Image (cartoon, rainbow, N blue to C red; front, side):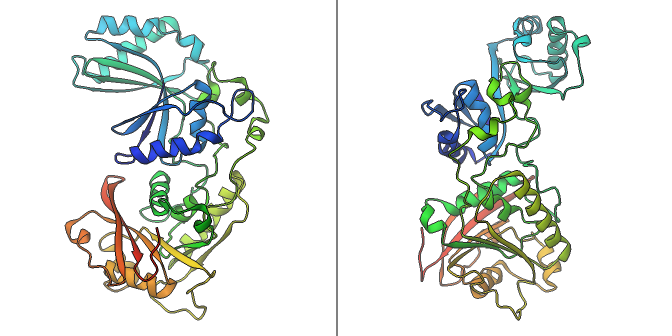
Length: 402
């Protein structure tokens, strides 16, 4: 059993993403995945996935909205520390771990055992009885998650390592960057049920792109991320196929074309455009993408340019944007700009047919008066690094899309 964690409110979309990527996985023989779709249970803050070890760990490569993937190795009811000590000691740790270098992550709620520090100390002491510290080596620490809830103790191994938003690119950030997992969610909401054929005719524009997170996530949305030091690669029970030099070559049927026809990002600051280009170059070193038509341009959204941006690539255009919150938008534009002005400008400058805006979740923002030719099709609230935001998606009435 695996538990895949995510941002609150993303659970249903994460379950859909798991189903979408399931056919892309491989079996332990290196052939196509023949395992039936797993049983998925949507929980608050994540999704339980009942599937074999080999398939569960591969979800790390493909899921773009998940935080991390935990493999549950034990679950039991416990209401006192002596029993907790004994239960932890009974786990066959040596079957799973190749090192005693362990980091404990403990949470406790609504349980008789609620002292997280003492829970950790008890688990450490019990673990050392069966896996002495003298066996410790220099490998990265394996995170072990201990969750105590309503007197049920769940013990899980972290298969991921660094948080999944750390794709291996996007090291250079602008001010107030958007986390990659959130950016992927925004792009998925924009796409919705639009067909692949229609997407392949659309240019995606970010008129305030910063270091390019939204566009880079849109470009790599269907690309697996192999070039990372995942924790499960050091487990004893990890299938041998993932410990060979050429295991990545077993993935033969992956989509390598990006979702959209073209990608274009604009920003007023030269330094963040430079960062965006460097992030793009780093990404293209790590994932296999064909037919990627992409460019970043230094330009003020609210100034006319001699090289008209309208229809820059031809065909239909969507705009996606995480504009500066609050007063920062005034600082960057040197004058007060409303979100209504921003919407109008994207239609005027890019002939946008569909627009996604990430805005502060405030009453005055939620009451934005849309231009007459726009209709709201989706409003999704969530948290962006502790800031309550809302994703507003609108489309043109004159040329309606899905």
